[in-house]
Image (cartoon, rainbow, N blue to C red):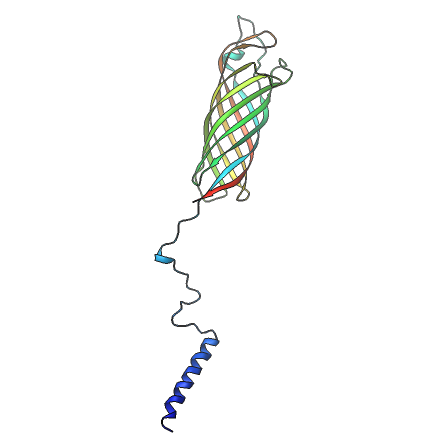
Length: 227
């Protein structure tokens, strides 16, 4: 009888332990459920950085601040200014880094007010662009932009003159989602335009014209890499 008593006590202890485990009591070898899991080695991995191809369109408006020598009187005879305001469309695309940089290009065409010297004056630009967008941790991000480009101007998509341009500006991007963006920008563009003779026979001198542009942008992102 005395030999069976320790065996009975051991059996009761085993049954009590099994009953506690079945009721969901935490085991001494496992951490509590509310304790966060520890990363191997005690170090969390860095955040995921995504690179994108960013592309889209923009509705643009150009205001002529100063036409320079292009619209200056020639030989004491004033001719209507062939460089006025313009409105059109820009198409752009480029690389958006995991950091604050965007590098890309844009093609822009706009109908320009030519004082009726052209039936349909089209002012075209081809630009290399850069943007710097500081990360503020919000959906709205300001940016600074700058770049260089080439231009062409003529009647009905023809090219009667050309030149080069520089630009710099400021704007803001608003993330509608992870892949869709709305933006607005203001940009100043000095443009060197080569001299030519227009369709009315007026001689246009080589000069630097100054424009202020505004853009309303809609752009999309396509993921191209992670690191």
